[in-house]
Length: 304
Image (cartoon, rainbow, N blue to C red; front, side, top):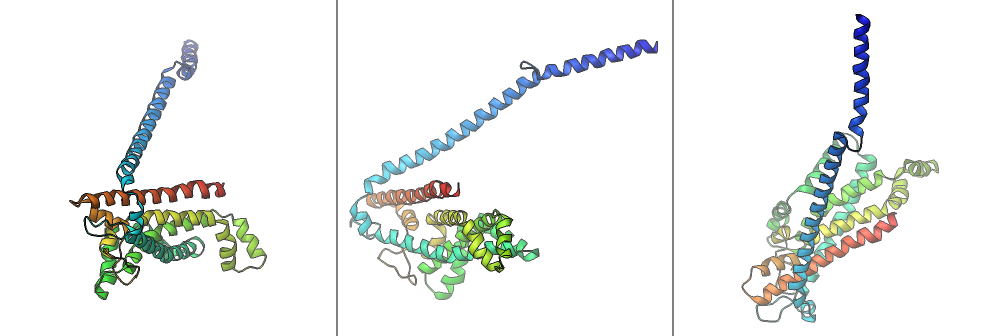
């Protein structure tokens, strides 16, 4: 009797073993379900990509159609003026370039030094706190940075200034450079560091002359991305540099900028101001797009 039962059990087990591979056959239930999920995920990914590309192309096309009409020599050589006075964007363009350049000159060295500290020296609670604050600044609303600098610089000095705007932009650029520098230095092979130390070089010389040189492409990429990040900021400049209808290159005085000029002109009831707002938006977009293309094409090939 027991032998008969053992025979039945072996038959059932053999049937289960034979049935299991059927699920993996091309027309099995599991294989069909997996093909369905693969096609569904692929379709959703392609749809999301098409939607993103459509939105980007729509924005660029709108800016080109509405902004190209205002591109003329007057736009680049005349300062902003009252409606109907044939004004341009020269002071706003120069002001944006000055404030962005000063911001990067302040933020890039500080960000690199902070990134070096986190990568090579940072240990314990100090490094954890610094990294946490840096990550917080990455997601902090830019208007809060503007209000902070307003209380820190504008209120004590009693007036708006281009320097205050540059400091606000530097704070926005700082965490990007910090994170990029730390990550790029972390990718430098340990063998390079050991080789430098083995030749008798001090740690700071190894970092400056070996590690930073090896990671310079990634660090420069981070700096350029920081430039693209701050170039179109409006909110912090409203509370710091404010804007200026006249020509001004003094960091101690209110200074014009493209983002603030676009903000002021876009809601105007005057057609020439609205046209200049579209043209300014086109210039900012093309500048940021050129920086991103330079980062991906130029530095990407060097990194490869």
